[in-house]
Length: 344
Image (tube, rainbow, N blue to C red; front, side, top):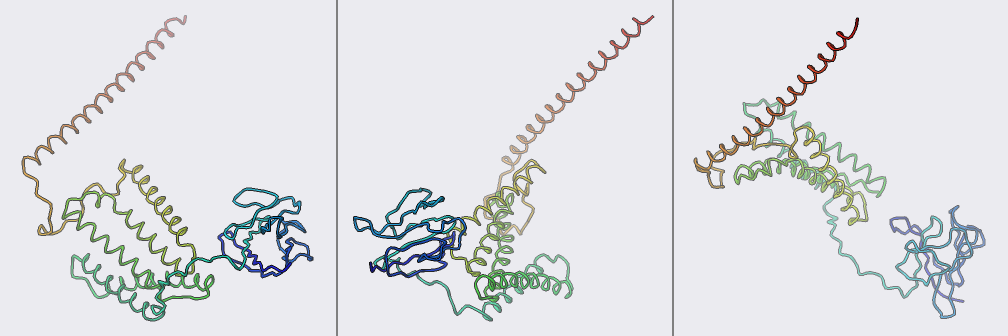
């Protein structure tokens, strides 16, 4: 029977490996060489499945009494009515079956700026790196620095960015066929700039508004900025599952934040990586209202009461331990004296 059918072999991620165009029904599938579609999968039978019309003129895929059978969405049955969006698993082989009347999805908008490639993003990234390197070195230089100090800072930052971009360019070349070194250099430049800007901006905001949380948890935004940078690297390298990639990187960032808080808690009994505002700026940057002397003294008295209570509890515990130790020592001495007196 003449009937145009397309059978697609898919990867576990849903990418099409090969598309078979067949015009005759039934279509036989298996490892044997007399099949219409020959599978290179040891987990499939020599004659595994057949695509044909049933009595209701429905296109079906049916199992030919194979050992592993046919499954769809983890459900195994003897036959399935063909659905163009369903994936059928035969052993380790994934198949999708479609006919010419299948309605494909609408065209997606291409947000890729193909002109932003090569030398232009590479130069933009280098200019950004040099500017941020000089600026951060100047801001952190309390004394009059020498030229070699600034050059050493620039060489280290630019060298890291070039090496990192080179790694991703090789990765992109292997898996996507295009290196896109300039785009990767621009991405890592934006990432490093974002890390530096957040470091300064968060400390300034914490000082200006007395937002101590920004000072206590400084590492977690840096983790999420790094995860965002990795996302754009992998998208540039050719990843075609942005939704799944976002979930993976979000989970990785959350795990990293959890590990950081766990290490801080084990070391200091606090979840934050800083206990106080360590960065001070000119008073002109203060925006939050000042605390009166009375409020300050009330906070000091409350803190003193809490410290005295903790100290008293510690002292009572130490005295109880010492009393228990002395009682145990006296009891042991009395037992020893009794034992000595009982001997002839």
